[in-house]
Length: 120
Image 1 (cartoon, one colour):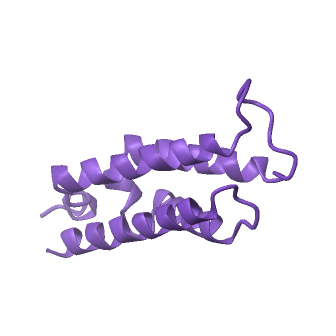
Image 2 (spheres, one colour; image 1 turned 90 degrees about the vertical axis):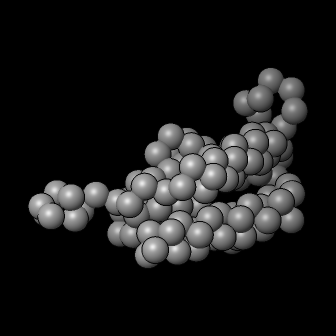
């Protein structure tokens, strides 16, 4: 086996990839729901974390478009996903805090599933 083959991540099962993409879709929808209804660009008065919302949007896009690499240990994408989980948990003023926690738990679960698949 060449060193390049050793470095390539094991492909994840299609059903897990679909679950990861669905989690990304829910993350994207959650982040967009944090905007005030109307023109889609104004934030609610108490919202002060526009940078958090933009970061989570970017991470959701990464999850959707490259789930295999996102879950590779030590990758920048994996670090971004772990950061997203922290942002969901520790940002103080989510409009729907329960939904933020549920998404964080779901993303953690997908990481565990992917790690188990990569070990097998």
